[in-house]
Length: 204
Length: 209
Image (cartoon, rainbow over all chains, first blue to last red):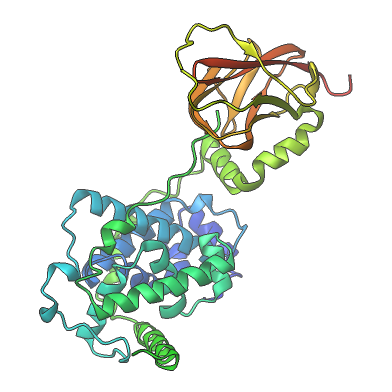
């Protein structure tokens, strides 16, 4: 992850409403954030809209950053929550989310998992498959395997133990491999993924 | 057939495929559009007090209860209500049966706690068998308040349905008062028409007295 730990001044300026400081602050992360957004969107254009929306929310909530963790850790945490919220809202608006399952398997040029994906079309299909992985697994999968973040970094972003990150990563990879092998059979993962654990009732 | 070696090979290749996705896309006007949107945004709003309190509590949720317990010190006490061998065939018709006091364990009549601090009451309902469909209730007297999410709650009584597991069922309740006094707390569990009730007294004193 890019080291912007010495950017406290930029953060403070951004917190005071300096848009240019904010842009400098997130500049290095933009390519990654756009890719991260792609795993929650149907295509590149939607991903860019989602990334922009998330960055606007980050800007609005900048004052809640209290310098207790690396800025990038906080940034990814906020961004991820925005993506999850957007995904849930989209799912509730329209259940008929485009998925690999809704198209005949023979029309889907799904790359074999043992191929290195290089061409644009195959890349889109791989993203589409990733978008069907259960969100908690997907986040870890993208941050670790696509973006190359370390287990410890992802654990900090997700606020979960490293062992849980490893477990989610393993299960995410397995789910993705199954999706790539048989998209029709596993195409309904999106709806299952929207069922989130509900926290226990507040003790009175 | 998939051999372990081929599985490993495929996993590595899948990771390579994923790694190959890390290609920076052309800007396509992304930054310009972001700039335009940011330019219309007001400066980030300062956090409201309630947001700050919520964030503080959220960050500490995992250890908040035990920490409160430690801070409360002698304020933490245990009410033990034993539900012994409730027969499954017991009819649940004794709606108007009088409250039956059933208690065991080291229950003291009075507990001294400092004022202006959150005290955690740990209700330990012990059951020899698991019991479905029970109703817990805790009633506080005037002057003593339930405390949740960093706020005082107005309700005097909380009732909620639940289930008793075989063994000990610990239910922490956070309460607080700002004035000294003796406050009787009533905790009940309704099981099959029977009301098991226990009363304890919270003796709230100013610190140092």
